[in-house]
Every structure is written in structure tokens, then in C-alpha cells.
Length: 397
Ligand SMILES: [Zn+2]
Image (cartoon, rainbow, N blue to C red; front, top):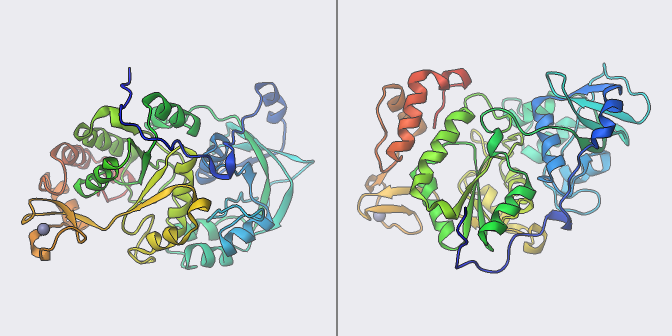
């Protein structure tokens, strides 16, 4: 039983991008016929994109992009019909796949039917150009660029219908569709809803941003991305335990924790825009953008994502960005702060590098409570001791 929040403000939930929440599910009666179609095996990232299209997370997209949309999107951050859309969503067509007629079965890596695509176009995808325009680099060391450059030269476009069941794995029960998050917000009576995208554990700095956002909103959607990420990111099951731990510091009736199944692209500024649109489709009215949003390595400036999102016409974006400076605990202030709110020198701030934190976790030590809540640190330390981190890379921060 959820308590309705008395102070709900008007406004939300947000209208879906493009005006209509897309849902693309295959009629169960048509599955048998779909099983007999020529098949294309999806990569994990493509399967996650298919799910995002089918659930409406990518509204108004109804399928994978053709050449005109691909080029318009890469060149000018809009689809060919003029809708703001920052990153192409394409489906690679391996040479071995033979097209007969107009329909393709889409299969997950293990072979299970994931959906069907009505082929409208096959085109040569200029991957180098896409990489430079969307990611700002064609360096194959960039994980998002590597995925683009590693895709087949041909792409197949068209509307899709999916048959995917509930998301599997440890995040399955958290993977709410946009319709489900909207229903959750309505049940709670929230009008202003702030969304937070993350692929990392939530330490004190991010908790502070979440609480600042919650001070001016009715509710918070803590919305970790759980699709394919890069080697070295923290395993999903560990992250979910860490999120549950930090949520003991929030009123339960003010937060929804849900997982977003979508591939991480590490496209920095452009991905910040995509992340905002996806949260708008989930019904959120506000979107938190911190430092180096969706960045990787040193490819993007610290506040480049904030600059891009702030430059977009508000009516076109349709969700209010909440732009935050880097946060830290200041010993002199005796509180969490940012450069905007604290005048003290750096040596008054508790700051630890990722490398320092990892060294502490490996040694079984907890980072200071000013950096990480003891409950969160305990989850991460335990995962390190169990070797859960080792399975998926080295980083736990
Ligand atoms: Zn201070």
C-alpha cells in the first residue's frame, strides 16, 4: 500500500516524446508464423534496443532506423521527420543473413524468438561518419565507437514487433516499462518527478544530488541502466544491493527504484539527451545531469553534456534538466556541498579517486562515511571479497 503524497504539484507525468507512448508487441497468434521466417541473431545491445523500442522507452521510434533517419540523426540530432533524437538506433545486417520477402525474425543470442521486423530498407551504414558525428571521435578504444565500427556495414530498417518476456537476470523484477512507471507515479500522486540515470553505485555525492532534486520535486525515479555496459563496470546484482542500501536514507514513499534495460553507449553529451528523452517517456518531468554524464575516459569535457542539453529548446526537449556541479563532503561546512555552495579550499573536502576507493575495498576496508554510506560500502566490500567484481572487471566504484 502506497501513501499518496499530500504535496503533489501539478504538471506530470510528462507527455511522451513525439506525443504518444509507443508499444510494439507481436500478437501471440502470429508467433508460430514468425518462427518460420529467415532469422537475424541480435547482439545483446541490439536486443536491449529492441526491448526499449517495444516498451516505448524510445518513443516515438517504432523500429530500427533507415538511411534518411540515420543520417539526419547523426548530422543534426533529429530524425528525418524532424523529431529531436540524438543517437542513431540501427540494426546490423550480417552478410550471412538472407532476406526473403519482407519479414525477418529477430532472435536473441541464445536463439529465442525476440520479435519480427518488417523490412523497409537495407542500406550501407557509414559507421566512421556516425562515430565522428555522434561520439566526437572514431577512436576504436572508445567502447561506444568500437560497437559502431564493429557492426556490419549493412543495416536493415523497419518497424518491429517484440515478443520478449519480462527481463531476466537479477534486474528482471526491477525492469518497469514506461507504462508501469507512469502507473507507479499516478498511484503515488506525483506531479513533479526527477529521474536519475546511473551505471554506478550511489555514493554520498550522488545521494546529495538526488536529495537536492527531491527537495523541489514530489518523487524520484532512481533509474539505473542495466543493459550491456563495458568491461569493468560494477555487476548489476551488486549495484542493485547497493541501491537498496542507500535507499534506507530516503523516505520509501518518495522513491521508485526501477531498472532501464538499454545499452550504454558512452556517447557523453548526445547520450545525456537520449537519457533525458527516455526518462520523459517514463513520465518524469525533471532529469538530473551531473558531471561528465555518460562519458568515458577523457573524450568529453566535464560539463559538455550539461551545455548541450541546456542549449536545446525546452519545448522540444520536454523534460527539465537539473544541472549539478560535482559534489563532495566539506569538513569545514560539515555538510555535502558543491563548488557552488562551499567557499572552502580543496583540502577541506573529502575526495577519493576511484583507484583509492578500489584499493580500500580490495583490502577489506570501508571508505570514510563522508564518501560512502557504510551500508553501501559494506555491499561493495563484500562483493570484492567474494570476487563478484572480478567476474566483470576490476572497478567497483
Ligand atoms: Zn565548505
